[in-house]
Image (cartoon, rainbow, N blue to C red; front, side):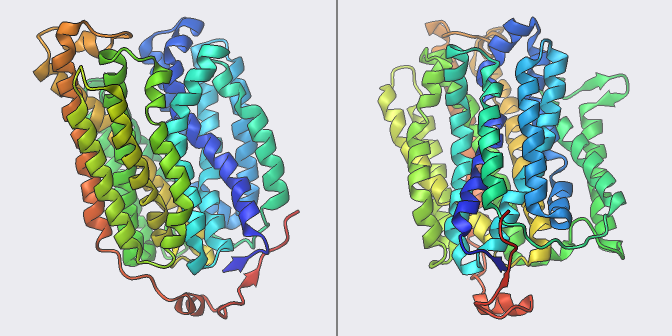
Length: 501
């Protein structure tokens, strides 16, 4: 392991950029109507403003994690931050929807270069038994950013215009670059032979799979164009990814993803668990925001503010939970967090009626924050505890990829479930109009609509119970002395990193 004298300033510098790129995953959803008006486009085109970013972000993560190992995580992070910041400026200056979508693709590629490096640096500059609080901060950043996006987006769009959801990244990106340049250490690189067949199979396979799942509802899970169909793309993506795993197993050189990582029980289980978390965090927002806005008549900003208790509790408790997982077996903390999250979502579903006092929803929102603070740190700490310096980038790339795929699955699944429940609960012909409404629904439709939203909220509640079932099987963390011995480093005398420059 490689340590630096002051690892926390380095971590805070990385977290600023990490927070910014995750906020951009959700901030655009609030601005879609204004973008449609400003660029004179339709709903199908504006959806791609978000979809293009998520695709460009998710697909290269396996590759960019390994690039960080080869060329240095600091170098790749700074390059990615530069690309992301300049692309943000390009987004804000876009004069038509095609230019904006292209700029969002470039922005997503910059984000993909940055994300694995944040986790890899934590793995390399904090000793295994000191990593809990650092991973707690990293995880809390991911959780809070997903909530801050809609709130910040609403404020900026209402006050300054849709362009400012992108322009705001420019000064933040400049500050994040200066801090990372000064505070993040230059870590030793590890010479890797690049697995070009692995890159091709994983990139194309992930693209086809993620595109098919993400855009399935748009094409009614049928034909896209000519012989191209949604299910054809999904099946082709799965076949290519199976081919990728086979190639990683038989490759006599250096594979893109060292499959021996999955022989580590906790790494495999943590990847399954973070998939359920990504699924649930993405899936829970849509039915809840629909309920707040279409049944209770809230604005997008007001509905996002209902999630403030979650953000506050998650942010405040994360450092304490981080310290706890260095002392207590993380499986108990993570399992409790998953169960509490399921309870909070079930509680929210029960409250969904047209006349529930709105303040009551703040209670399960707070419980959701307590629950999520007990999930992010234990999972990331458990996933990375046994990784060596050469594997940090690959491991971080895999972990972040599974989280993103979970988010894509959650988005597609909740959209499909909402459509199905609306068809059952709403009068004939009213379901389509309800899903596309921009203001409160007629009172006569409230009961059916809120019932459909309540039922849909039970999907993420069920998904996190799977996460709890997985977390309970985490093995007891290994002793630090055994981890150092495995990588040939005396305990307490890890190899020092180069000083920041």
